[in-house]
Image (cartoon, rainbow, N blue to C red):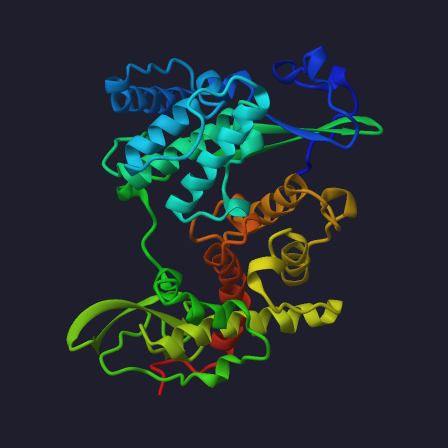
Length: 398
């Protein structure tokens, strides 16, 4: 759980010792891939598949890639690859010889890539700076995204994740922390089943925003009743109060198997806009009720949980944890510090068995509302729903 502070170079793991020319100025951070991560068979296989894919795509142009780390940084090959995939022509100089012109060309290419992938710059797992500095992880994230978008049938290795070390230079020396970075998704047969939040985020963005920017909304705005043909979770309204139930309901002119959520002594009607929004509003109302004791409130899920601070304070309130200020950053000032906080929070939730769906800490930091709601639902289902179920009479809800 501790971030493993290291106070001088002699205490650094041998595999991440910094070359003299890469000594970090005080206050700066850098991400490193230790040799054991680089030698991971699935990590090597991912690079091999991507290199073969790029070379096959650019074969008519007689372009050969040998190293993703060394050959992609200046934008030349990336420019040719993207133009081939997107079948468009970018207005960039063909050959960029100086560092300034290479960086400028790379910026134009990445801007076009992000636009094509519909990824906002601040949410992308790559940047001009990281690609130009030959950050292999950023390059891999970019290429995986391009492959998924333009050639989804490409057989990429599934569930590739590597251990990454972040080194920070402080007044006392160097401090390091480790985390796992996910590069590719699980295989379809290993993916968790879709849940109510998958249904919620199929809605139009302006409707989802009603949950994310909740204001004074209350869960009571939506009706709570038992639909015709509903199936009560086993055990009645008792200890299984947080178990999702699968219902057969009449919708859109035909019968279909859909998700619903068991809440205390009643069931929210499934696939109903008001119902799904009510669930999100109920979660945020619950969170605000608990945070009120600390003088805090949540108005926007996208931003207020991204740094992990409120999430850690909420977990401490609900689970009775005492978190020393040395264990997390109370006022995080960088993405790495935010990532540390969120990773710690997810570790605590995992230890308590409150993560029913795999969640990447990077998604929370990148303000992914679906991942944030899933995390909060774990706490909501344990504390709010269990309290409702314990108060409710046993048996079928009326």
